[in-house]
Length: 447
Ligand code: FUB
Image 1 (cartoon, rainbow, N blue to C red):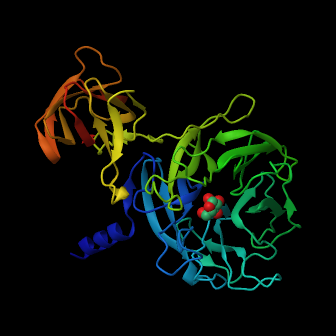
Image 2 (tube, rainbow, N blue to C red):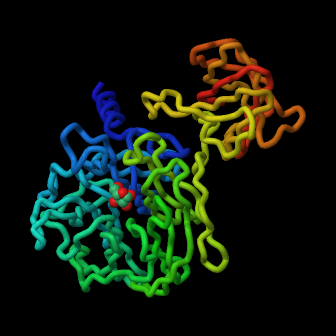
Image 3 (cartoon, rainbow, N blue to C red):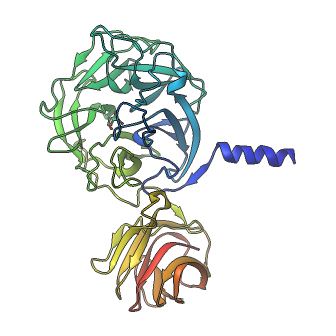
């Protein structure tokens, strides 16, 4: 009985969110993702967007954040939410009416974890105004508990802190406030060790913010969102040392196809693959201040330049054949008769569905892990008012390897089990096609 209670409490406190598709965090809004690899796992430190509570926050219809969660994963597919690590009520120097806990970062130094976060201060600065400050909270483990310092870092009025520790052990604090600034940090990670200096060699027109620096093969990459046209895109500049001079090197990701005004990035190497963490507004198509974190693979050219990343719905990581496979997070889709739509436009967190209206319309979902020799059954959740016929196969429509699925008429969501064949062990893509003339909508399938 006691064991049962403990397990139940653990499940309530630490939900495991098994999703590899974009967006990766599916139980709340999340933005400004800083990903770090600690002890063989990826830890994700995002901002936590919420809807502005009535009469609260800096202003209505603006960014609104009261706290931070940390998430972790050892495969980029299964994410664990470790809950709140820092909240505005628990930090002495933060104005707890401002809901301004913007983009954070976290680094490890000598076995301790330093979480850097910006917020509006409750202290009046030299200019007589309360502005943004950057504070630090310290923990023994990446999951916390984190103990916030009583005061923000002196001499750093700004947002979007990023801490870069160079190979020689020198740590740098980089932040934004119209321009991007950098200063050395003392060994204690809590105080500046040099005068802040502006990183001058970046584009001069249009907002720049969200700096994230990393080093690869002796090249220092300064990445940042920048408004070159009307909304932010992700760009980078390179140098041979953290203080520059930097040289503009290109665009990492173009402006949001869904018109999300902000974007914000971090770039990490995990198990020999580089990944771009960024955000869009998937759970909130009509209000782009409620954002959601995404991940896509990032690759370099031989000369060290970054190949432009195209945002995908499929994201990264493997999906187990026995999990609910959300085909609407597709890799490829036919030009005609196939589309995706929200399941419920009054509650976007209910996700998406695949809509196959015409004969021969199809959708392809890659990287499904089939861990058994043969699969005989498929569960499918669908709607098809007139009933329909689908086919499913792995990789390509080879003769004899395609299963036909007859779906009886149902105007409501219905889950049914059908016999299938032709599924091989290993990692495969799936292609689901409409083989009949009637529309079929699919929420998910699983083997
Ligand atoms: O999340 C609030 C602000 O939006 C961040 O600090 C910026 O980087 C932008 O993403």
